[in-house]
Amino acid sequence: MKKLALIALVLALAGSALPAAAAELGKTFFQGKTIVLNDDGTWKNADETSATPVTPAATPVASGQEVCNTAKLVPVKYCVDSGYWVQAEKPTPDYETFYNNTNGSLYFGLITEGLPLTKDFFRNSILDNAGAVAKGGRDGVKVIEDKTIQIGPDTWNYLEYSIDIDGMVFRYSNYYTSIGDKGSIQVLFFTLDTVFETYRKDMEKVANSVAIVY
Image 1 (cartoon, rainbow, N blue to C red):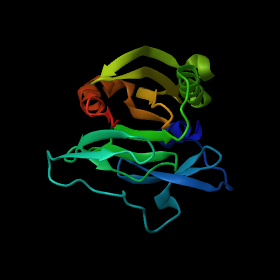
Image 2: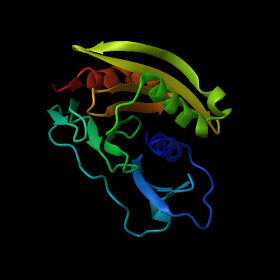
Image 3: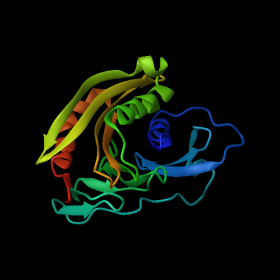
């Protein structure tokens, strides 16, 4: 499992001091600014080193139009409101697709893997990722919900958890499953803990559109 993906996302939001020598790993778009992620787990504002900021990969079309897509690596379909979700540059190559909402305060991405993963391995990898950057390590990851759910005819695993990074608490909503021998997928949402409930319906609307294509 590509554990770096979630770590990079967390660091893109939380931030830390930037050493002088760090190789660029990828970029993400956060609150109107392009953030450069480095291979040592640090980040910086792209505007600090480049006169030409990178823009998101796509912009929304007509407000309220539902757009459905199928993941490339695994047979999973999902739908988004193009007037609410903006497709953004992927923070790392591990993400098949990545979005933020129109005011840049809620994030959503698909992480796909060509290998099927057991539930225990999947769950532990997710929590290890979070613990790698959380205050208190793995013990600092607060699991809020851990259950199986039905989305249409399909059974998914659901993990909701929060972590404290430098006094900022982020909360994650993670739907994950393996699809036979086709591979595995995470449907991941995150925002600040203080506004998570405000956005729960927006997250669930996308999650409820997800379908495994048999």
